[in-house]
Length: 569
Ligand SMILES: Cc1cc2nc3c(=O)[nH]c(=O)nc-3n(C[C@H](O)[C@H](O)[C@H](O)COP(=O)(O)OP(=O)(O)OC[C@H]3O[C@@H](n4cnc5c(N)ncnc54)[C@H](O)[C@@H]3O)c2cc1C
Image (cartoon, rainbow, N blue to C red; front, side, top):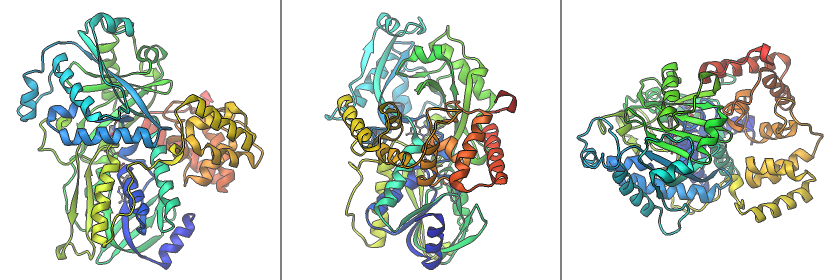
């Protein structure tokens, strides 16, 4: 169903089993699991899909080795298992990532670790090699016998400097272990959502639709494009509004304080020397102030992050100049001869972790990343249905969290689970092979079927996995041409995204369906070109196109520090 058809169906049949509010990864994961189990479910987001905290992540599918020192063994074990599943179920987007920890001391941390377990240490302090070794052994054990990723290795001072020529000679040694790299979280989330809709004709997802209020058996939804409102009568509401959970509850007359979010920011830099220095590795290390920070290989750029700062209103989260200075400064700790300058920053972003309120840890870095469900129900709520609020969680553990929520929802609805998502491939990960020969064979098949040349198909395969067949078949149906501004994209490819991936605004394309903005590939003319191409599929007149260009330029400047002047083209 397209957007209008979904709205019509809501008008004709406002009763439904489950309404999910918030299409971040937790709302989307739960949507898929409920859909798979035959539940009629509606998912709404006031913005685009995966545009909140889920678009602000460090791109790591990880167990969270540092949570071991907070004693969060259950969380780490679950996240490692889920990391492995992501690598297996979405191999076109998630792949093993060698992660290197440079260490400056051998022994310190031995005393700190037990104090941290007991919650007596209120400041992070330097972790030594011995304590990291213990953590990595535990981490390896959690990976299990399947060995989705290799075991960790320790390198001596000399070996480390041989491997990474620009590394700070003051290091004691390094350790390399493996986690997962989510190259494009926004696409991954969208593919999960599209799978769910394809699987169940009674599962529908709408972006740019807000939950604005609720009373008795009714929730009022507002279409943010037209301001029109719609009534729905759900049996159950799942509040998956992430850092906005308490605001969403408030709109239902429920006063909660579940989330004590912390802001985290990142910058993306175009610094070929630094990119070459880290190679295919993430560098995950302790900065001078004891904070754990990262240098991360994101295509041909380097992602640098992140901060952990308390914030009250998630709408105000921005990556500040002060954070930028901190990020630039931390590079010198590991690669002292490599200079990063502010002009090399191509993109900034910030988001708020929807963590359970403080209390549990003494520094923001020690707040638990675990997840749980808060249930509100009963006469006092003035609502005839219960509200489940999804608090906390990590991108990596979304599937397990969604499974937990779905089990609870199914029990409430009196249904039993028929299918689970543990080994369920995602989108273009279905039938995707990481084996080069098998990939070649698949691409030859697509080439014979669609007539597109192999180089082009290879590019599509790296973006869409096995959905390449659908993209290429669509492309072939009409005349195509590369975009002038980014020739590795074509007009028909953009048209495919617009027509098949629930695109509403120009910024949905530049920020989430593609990585053009994050990788610093946009120009003023390029934005105009994209608006022209999209306009053909969306029937935009000149006024609408201009409005879309202005909206995108405004968002890029305000949220991402990207100012594109006309003079630069
Ligand atoms: C800086 C940072 C780095 C991180 N790095 C990692 C990492 O590397 N690996 C990892 O595993 N995890 C990481 N995380 C954690 C992870 O990204 C989050 O825990 C996860 O994305 C939360 O998803 P969510 O669906 O709960 O919330 P969100 O993604 O924020 O989704 C909530 C949605 O609700 C919508 N909404 C709000 N109010 C309403 C309303 N009234 N009506 C309709 N919709 C509404 C919002 O628009 C939003 O899209 C990181 C988080 C941050 C902030």
